[in-house]
Image 1: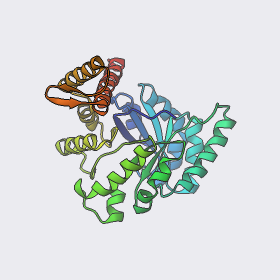
Image 2: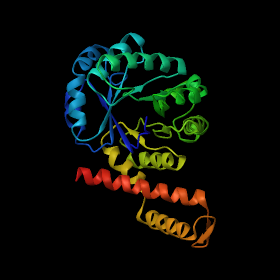
Image 3: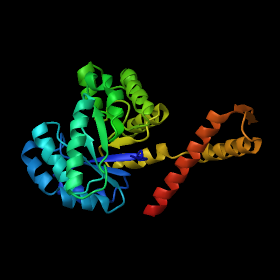
Image 4: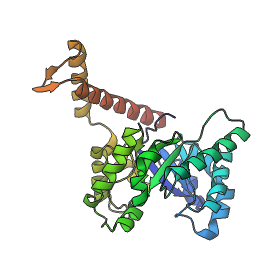
Length: 292
């Protein structure tokens, strides 16, 4: 399955009709319809019953729509059935601790897709890692064919590992997740540190910038006001694009090898990173142009 290229992933509680109705207008690259922690137990059945309408509405603005299923198996099975029937683009699976659970879920998805007459695996999985067991199993989880990305569940990780909410204590766990994901050609999304204080956009920007420097592909958002910040952070600056263009032009003109650009040596890895900057800039232009 092709790796996702989202910058922003907005959580939306699936039982809140007023939030669902506006979600497609917020500009997020992906929308996560939450059937887990964001929904009271008494509202879960109703949210699931209305999932098809919610998915269609959220997808109407061009966003990828994921469904975060419940962490209890008895509810998760019903959530998965509803998500596939609603034609959600993928699943966000919480509290993943081992690859075995992903294997069972993948088999169930295969049965549902076959019954629906779909050709091959069509429902990717984003796995949320929320405790020490999940961190240690991250490589095996990332290796599962349906898994396209990992997401650190920072609040639960902090509780399980006895960390405070600052970014620095998460360095070891986030490094482990990034290495596990990249070793299998997968991505990592999320913030570095606690996101509970959603109203502090300056602090959120700092976490988003750290996530970008850390190699994360994008950031999860719990409030619409955070989306613009993420898009600003993950868009290459004009200076970055200009420098990348110079690097690629000089490297290609030299026919490979090593070349000096603005007093710095450029070899293939440096040129490849410059190409990635240009690719990212092109993706941003395409997304923003499609929404203008």
